[in-house]
Image (tube, rainbow, N blue to C red; front, side, top):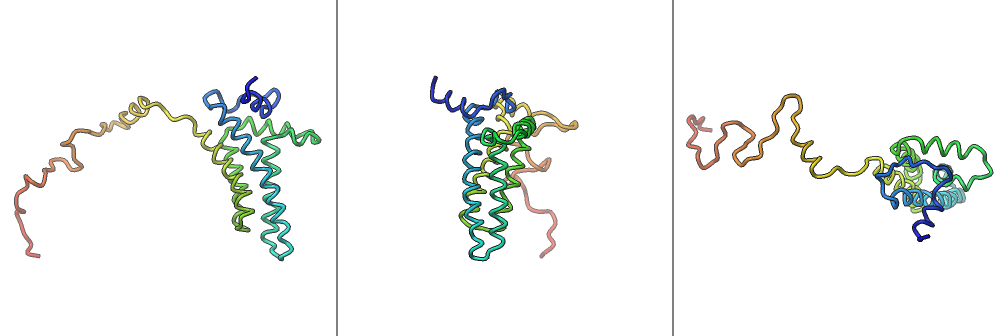
Length: 194
């Protein structure tokens, strides 16, 4: 068993279907899950650091720390439900979210990461919530899918839409019909003496 198979075996959940699909590379599938686990850990850790800012009487940082810790727990619940084996409904919730499209998870992570950064802008909230934001961006890129081949993009660009003819690509094609180059134009027929 190779090292990559061991890692994917650790990150895969039992009886897990492949919601992402076969078109995604294995390092994106499992790398995004690993990034989410690491992001959740640091969000909880730095959220706790922000909660301790109540010593300096910063209520907004206290609220930001609580939100960041909750976001970290939600990400950990969705990415690694094995960490919450004492709760029975965790696998049901994680399976529901896994059955949704990837852009749902991306939007959820990005939305959860923004409030702590706005409430208490500092290194702790920026790093902890920034990792969750990065995880959401990775899931968003995976939701966009694979780029089309050059032939497919060229064919899509040359299609006509609504009876319009495709754009001409020769050197004589201009924006205005019957436009002449500057070297062939004569003097202006009327002059306003302005």
